[in-house]
Image (tube, rainbow, N blue to C red; front, side, top):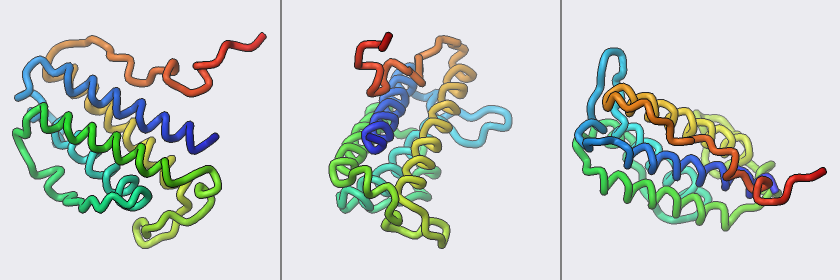
Length: 170
């Protein structure tokens, strides 16, 4: 049950990331920074996709993905369609990784050391989904700042949780 909930949250946040990237009125604005904002939405999106393809796709799903974290922040002017392809690849990596684990795996050590420490798979996946949601929120604010469009995109939709698909109780 917990693995299905965490998987659902990852996929929900990736759908929100897609909506955010698609909502930029001009794709050049994905790469703009202002004031104290040092990371563009484009770089944050590439970072999130690389992160998930590495930690969930490669480590749990055995996809063979090789991460280049430095390029996630160094690349510029990547097209919107290429970013969306990366979002799709991250979604596929999440699906594949979660096909290979279950609730019992959440108490096992994650198959890679994190900052030279051992953490459980459940703790690390919970951390990663929070990391994803945090940066999607940053991208939402970035989009509003650089486009001037205050439209909300319902990025944290409760309607997408697994239990909301069932009829409400008494």
